Length: 115
Image: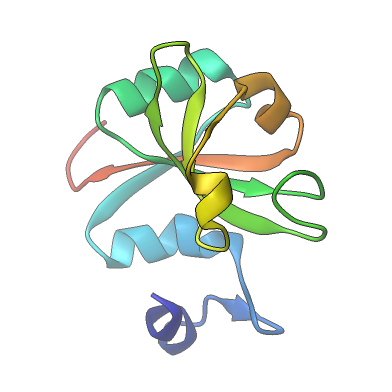
């Protein structure tokens, strides 16, 4: 994906642009739509089998900015997050409100076709 981002202009000063989550998804044959910072919307999307990509600001995951994926919802309603920078953060569940407080944007990703 790093090479794809570079080849298709989804980098700015070495950092992945937000357009990667929309235009990049489309180039990959995926559908993407922005979601509100709402735990119920994220739970709905993940429950339908659609991962949700978050861009986070400073907090538990980053001191600057970082993309992670909400991959599942556990039995307590917490988010199972896959963080490419941390097996430790990926091995636990997270309180949705805590994570939402660090979110800058959210995208629901689905296979090609209509939402």
